[in-house]
Length: 137
Image (cartoon, rainbow, N blue to C red; front, side, top):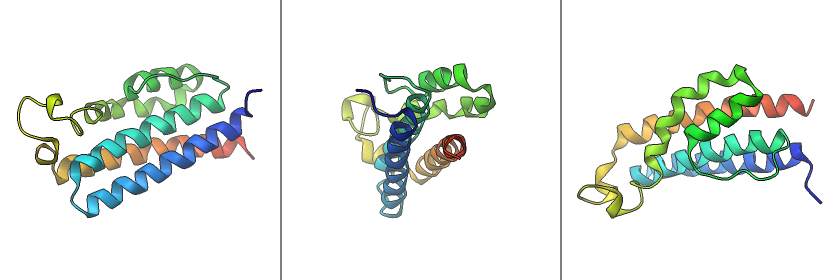
């Protein structure tokens, strides 16, 4: 039996918020590459939260850009999220040395990168949160 779509969406949104909190924690500890990665993860999970709440049963993939396109099929009012696709560049290179042309991830990402990533992820979570929490009322 499939879970209730709204409940499943909220589960994913709760985890997205926790990942964003963890990104901020990493930022404060100057672990900027991890702050970037966790920001990408939080946005991905928030977008998946929306799709699950809409009744999607299986949501695959990790691309924020692709997930935004899927979300827009349901709600064109979320078109302000199109600009968050830059978060996709934080999925692999922030963690794996072979995802970079040289160096290591912890040296390649800085405070500016992390601040931008956290800001973008916050925008996704805030917008999705408003929509999902509005459905429950």
